[in-house]
Length: 91
Length: 417
Image 1: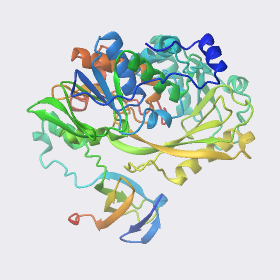
Image 2: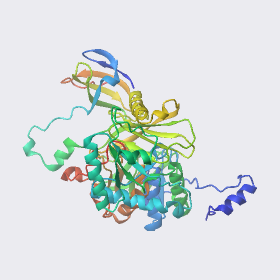
Image 3: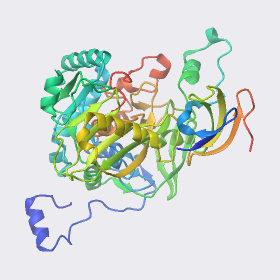
Image 4: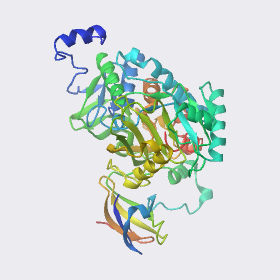
């Protein structure tokens, strides 16, 4: 359990949020052209990183907006929070 | 050859105050090369090594474990064993395991304390009732024992359950698998480790895998904290850390690793002589031989390798437990812990070859791997030895995420495994 600094509402209890999994997985531009392997990659395959991972979160019991987070999954430390559409931080 | 455990050896060792028991397994330094290396010394990994040595005559093998034997999820689960899964593929897999459980203590000469005390699954709404009845029929068609119980029969089987119809989620019925039950999880790891060691398997503890060496599409060996080990076959059974090992070989798996929590109460006299699972409200409880209530909570929704979960998950489970068992209202909880489970999109495991020759994965057991330990080891050993899956694990291949032929046990096996 940890505190999350929602970019729209400020610091709130993690209980108010819903995790949305790995971020920056781009929706296929031409779904009809995709092979089965490419569909599997898009739908199911995940990096599941131990270490700093970029992921999506939703403030489900708050403003209900989505945003991105860089979080160290080995100790749950939040490194950065940035809005949807922004590029992930490099540091 | 080690001494056989028996009433006589117990008596003999009692005379010397139990100070002269033999080590159950050796502590070898790794050889330069093995015919196969198993990554992960939990129950599944040790069972794999045991059956490779026993049934496939591969004695020149090693199990490498980054911590100590059984220190991961094998020693962290709630020890429930059952096989009442909906789909044919799952029924085959889990019932294969249950059949091995029934003779495991004798086979290993190690008391795994397998207790067929029954597992009851409760229904709390109309959809639950329909699903559980359907599952009962499916189980019986697959030769798995299952009965549907109405509310009175539930109360009769486990009298401490609150079957009052005016609680928030009243008990409308349930299913019972009498052959199901529990086993002592540590003993399973120790028993398999001792059995494998006896047949010449090297069990190497405190040895973390740092890399997988391959030439083209064939594995050559593993880099570990104890040096390079050459091998042609690598079986990865790393549970929550499967993706980490896969990344070393340049593979991506359809897994997400999440914390799953469990807790035990202070020990009390026998009060519940079965296992009761309630998926709709997410509460499951049994009692250990020491007298502790063993309670399984749920997973968090975020990826984490921290072996810690959120407090509200435990709180939610205890709310449900208290409504179903008001008698527990003043009990104190003694310990709480988390384990990292690797969850597949279809909540079914992967026991499969990969696109890399000589690299095999046994993972994705998610929240319910313990019950399958002997069957998983047996089938994975078959897959590694023959470079071909057994017919019972053929459906659990990695390619199902490409073909779409998933074994969707999310709804069927329900939340709690």
